[in-house]
Length: 135
Image 1 (cartoon, rainbow, N blue to C red):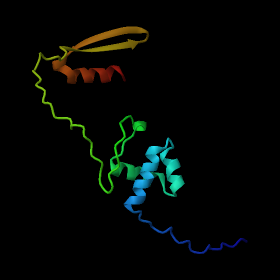
Image 2 (image 1 turned 60 degrees about the vertical axis):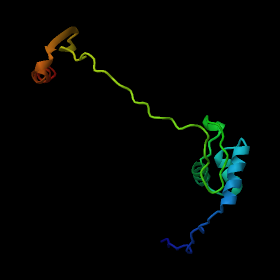
Image 3 (image 1 turned 90 degrees about the vertical axis):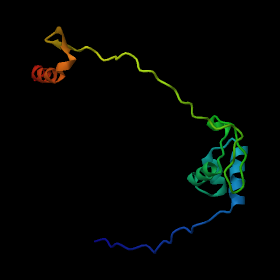
Image 4 (image 1 turned 135 degrees about the horizontal axis):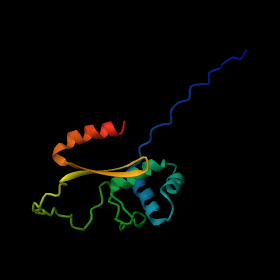
């Protein structure tokens, strides 16, 4: 008979708050190196998802993400000097209706190709007929 022993209570890891100077230093380290976010986070003893959030919150983009690197703003999002894309309304003129005049069904029944054209106006009866054929 085995006995189950309970392990001593393990306290949760303390919750740390990092000041903005530390965040800026870690983000700058990431931007200056060619290391991955996970590598930089490991070097500073933080989780990679936390560093990713700091990078995102700071508005930092770099050439690894196919965009030009932006400077880190201490305590605020980095601003870009690029203009914001404007909304361009487009007028679309109605053209001729492109609705088909008939329903075309192509079947292969016992090796024989069968093509059926059914008027669109009678689509519900076409559906009923198709259900019967496919039984």
